[in-house]
Length: 222
Image (cartoon, rainbow, N blue to C red; front, side):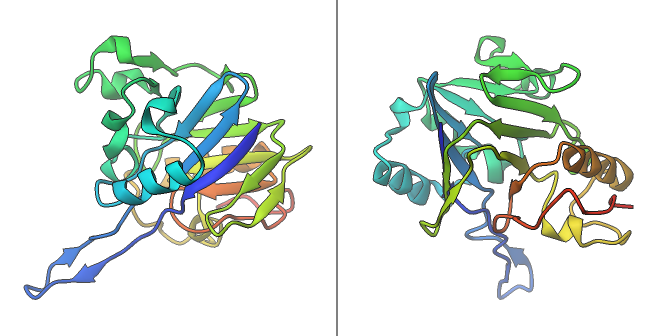
């Protein structure tokens, strides 16, 4: 199993002439996993990011119709907008969140306790706080992680967390300060601690670079 960071999530805020905020290139991260069961994409990025996502996948030898599974961390459009391009993929999300937007046949419900294994060595953990129905994913038994900048990290014997917006460096460094972009600050912290309690060696967040600080020694996020 090999993991590729197709796109690093970014916050891209500008102020237009009217003094309003715009986010012309804002997008969540996109991750590709080559597994024995098929090609898995975790999140699909924003509308603005689609040309970049498509090009980067092509550079990895993957066309949209080659993707077998799409796992969505949540349904905010910077993470899920491009899902319709992957017409042959089976889509996984929290089914009760998406039941009003797609047919039930397209969605597999992940509303289970613990860490359900979706396909071998890819597990899901519900991590609400930023969004009511946030998922994070843990990948084990992978060989390598190739980052957006082409750096390659050895993952043998390591655990990778693809956290979506449930965890990022700002959350880890918050030290009890109120967190941005959350609908429930307390629940967000509980979810972040639950992710850290799984002792991942690396975290690919929904926005920002890879977090590779040794995680086992981190204190709880108060």
